[in-house]
Amino acid sequence: MLETQKPRSKQSWAWVVMFGLIAVMLMRLPPMAAEQDTVFGAFRALVEVDAIARQQFVEPIKDNHFVEGALRGMMYRLDPYSGFLNKAELAQLQHHNEGAYMGIGIDVGFVHDKPTVIAASSDGPAARAGILAGDTILSINCTRVHNKSVLELQALLRGEKGKPVTITIRELDNGEKRTAQVTPESINIETVRGSHRTDDGQWSFMMDTPAPVGYIRISNFVRTTGTNFAAALREVLAADAEGLIIDMRFNPGGLFTQAIHIADYFLSEGVIVSTVTRRLATHDFHATTETLAPMLPLVVLVNQGSASAAEVLAGALQDHERATIVGTQSFGKGSVQHLIHLQSMDAAIKLTTAYYRLPKGRIVHRHPGSENSGDWGVMPNIVVKLSDAESRAIQLSWVEAEKMAGGFNMQDDQPKAVIRDRQIARAIQVLTQHQ
Image (cartoon, rainbow, N blue to C red; front, side):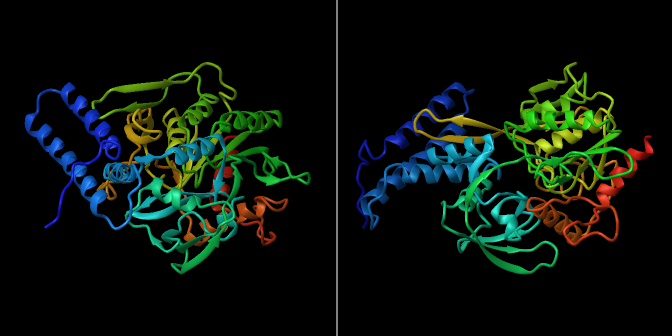
């Protein structure tokens, strides 16, 4: 028969704090005795398990070990984008939002419930190893990933400086299973890129076309993205461009405030996006009159890897009839996560609190079971589908552009490093038809 012991106050302090906080929150709610009893009962069971394990587990248990595990499990049960972050993970998140972090340069999400590379930084070690957007992740360091949250996947992929991460993937274009070792490194995210590198290594934001057409690719949204985009846009305007292509293919999102800033460069009035909570409370984000290019013709490129803040920007410009959207339907990650710091420990939770709603009322988020409805994300005005092989070739061309002067060439007799991009070609056609 197993013996039981009363948990010592020091060991179970974090549980007591958690239990007390839940009790206070429940007391503030309308009386729901049955539900309160159920919640109290569930957490009493957790405290009981903690006490038993501390007494009888074969190895000593670190303080807060169970608490952190329970919190991670609780958040994972909500949705793939909510999660628990300890002190180290909080610091990593802050560095990522600032545009500099330690990692391998990929963002992950779920496609048909499978962990999938949503975006791979073209100057990151993962992309150099041939791990690209659309590839399915099968394991990380021999750990299966089918039951992991997005935050847990990111933590596994982050690894340690100088220590290779072993990743097994299934490639998008050929379905082959492949294992690669990728060494994490310090990554400074360059989120605003041009069409090609000039001889001095700088980006050119003008395309090599008969009519002057600008091109700006946004690979992510961090704190510097809006400012850097504005600088690139001013170069395009100074070159007397007759139109601009904004490329957000394989853009996983990021800080949606930066997407709002960029939308505001092209809109002078109206709602850019709204957030809607489960209680239907809304918050509208409005355009201001301080626009940089209110009349410049725009084409925005999106695909299945365009998510979150990228969908906010594309959807806002589309709904205001300010841009033509070219490509394929976007990813459908339209939920808002708030970072909430915990008072009881040096940690935080990332909690989904609202959904994005575009100006014409469309909810961006793709809910489970809505795969067949198609009522999510941003639907292009002009659909141009690429094969998996074409999508991979485009990403590889971006990797090559980081290492050499080159870019997009619309001719057939192009060098190997430069490929023909049918979505770019269609975007140029749309813009030149405006002339």
